[in-house]
Length: 169
Picture 1 (spheres, rainbow, N blue to C red):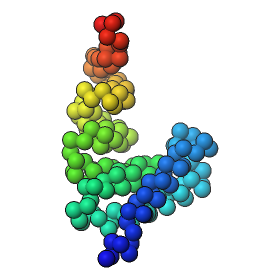
Picture 2: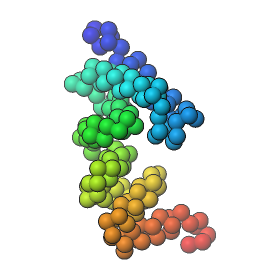
Picture 3: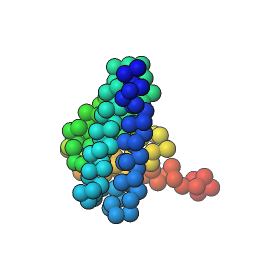
Picture 4: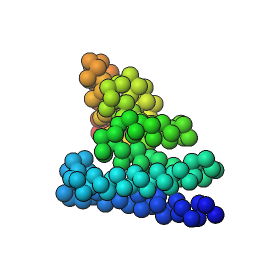
C-alpha cells in the first residue's frame, strides 16, 4: 500500500524522462554544459529517482529497477557530483557485478577522479565486448596518460583490426 501511495514507478519514469529531455535539448552542449533551468531539471530528476529508489531499495524489486540508480548516478555526474555518481555506480555493480555497461561506467568515473589503476582494471575486463567500442578508446587514452605506450598501441591496433572488413583481413 505504501509503495502505491508513493508511486515509485511513475516517479522513476518521470525522473528518467527529465534526464533524457535535458540531454536531447539542442541548447545543452553534448548533454554536458547545462544552463540553470536544465540543472534544475536534472536536480528534480535526482529527487524523483531517489524517492522511487527508496521505495524499492530494500525489496526484491530493486534489481528490476536498477536503471533508476544508474540514471540517478548519471544525473549526479551531469551536475558534477562525481562522488555521488560513484556511489550509485557501486550500488549497481554490487547488484550486477558482471554487467559490462556498469563496469564501463564505473571505469569512466574512476578515470574522472584519476584512479586510473581501477579504471584500467575495470575496462580491461570488458575490452573484448565489441558492443561497447568506446571502452577501447577510453582505455587507450588512460594507458597513454599513464605512459604505458606499448599497451596503448596494442589496444588501438586491436580496435583497428576488429573494425576492418573481413575481406581486408
